[in-house]
Image (cartoon, rainbow, N blue to C red):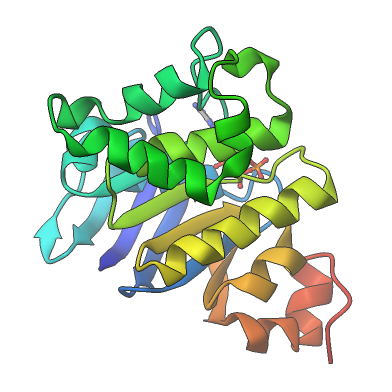
Length: 238
Ligand SMILES: Nc1ncnc2c1ncn2[C@@H]1O[C@H](COP(=O)(O)OP(=O)(O)OP(=O)(O)O)[C@@H](O)[C@H]1O
Ligand SMILES: [Mg+2]
């Protein structure tokens, strides 16, 4: 569904991630893991046209989308949830969801889809008339995901949706993403929360200093002492 080929991404004249080739197959949840500053966000920004691609390609459903901007990608079925500033704080929950459907203005199914999102995230229904600024961190992340879902994506790309959340809120978000995957949405997720993410993803890539140093099935990574202890700050699950 999504593939990067030997991608080099950075800012200005400085390449940050180098030679990254990843694949997300249809129906998969794939994780990008690695420490602070390893380049997870930069790689994602390169994929969604928000950072400079120096070389390499991004292919989505057989089409070269290298450098295509995030707003065009929405129309192609890619939802992107950035790490920061991912909801409109001065708007209500319902207004944020409506904004997520801006590419579908006038469609009668928008209300129906909002209803589906409230079914999936009852927390949002409870707060539908509250301003996003009044939501907890976890509720805001649910809203950011809900907003992205309003554009009916086939692929959802999330940048650290559990950052600075409590363990309980982080688990809730990740379990909702697994539900979305089961509904048929493919997922690419950057995370620092390696243990929880490996427990719910199918495969993962580990970035260190801008390079991909390992990839594999999440369960195999979890049982690799070297990868867990050296790169992910985890005791392996053997
Ligand atoms: N806009 C920018 N201009 C220049 N350098 C940047 C910019 N954004 C990030 N960087 C640099 O790129 C490197 C990778 O940062 P990036 O945000 O991709 O890491 P990350 O893996 O997402 O980290 P975190 O887990 O903390 O979010 C860092 O050294 C950072 O300082
Ligand atoms: Mg980041």
